[in-house]
Image 1 (cartoon, helix red, strand yellow):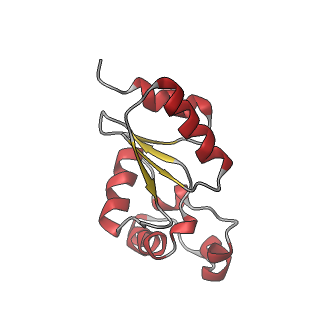
Image 2 (spheres, rainbow, N blue to C red):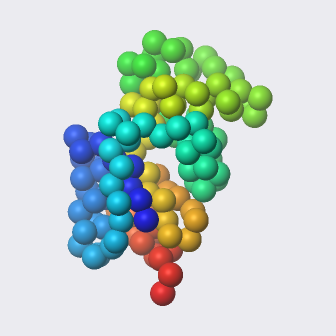
Image 3 (spheres, rainbow, N blue to C red):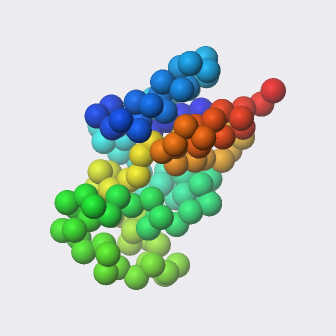
Amino acid sequence: MEIWLNPACSKCRSAKKLLDEDGAEYTVRRYLDDPPTEAELRSVLDRLGLEPWDIVRTQEADAKTLGLKDWPREPAERPRWIEALAAHPKLIQRPIITADDGTAVVARTDDAVRDALSRRPS
């Protein structure tokens, strides 16, 4: 299990606390310091079952500068969105937990963190 987090984010700290309280084994990826590659983003998006525009923090300054709200949200544009996320990791919604069963969740709620924890092998 891995958690992509920004230590300054309250949702990330809350998710990490729940993982710790559960005794979960996980690795921390500070994705702003160690940005995911385009290939890693594609993999995580597949695991999430989401499109790149589904995990964009639209209120970030970079999103406004890039004009993301006007970008088409269609399959042909997927590479462009992934490239933007890789180049501007602040745009990535957080935290993201990759679960042990090969799936992933955007863990912004306690229930989402518990969902990821429930996916561990017994």
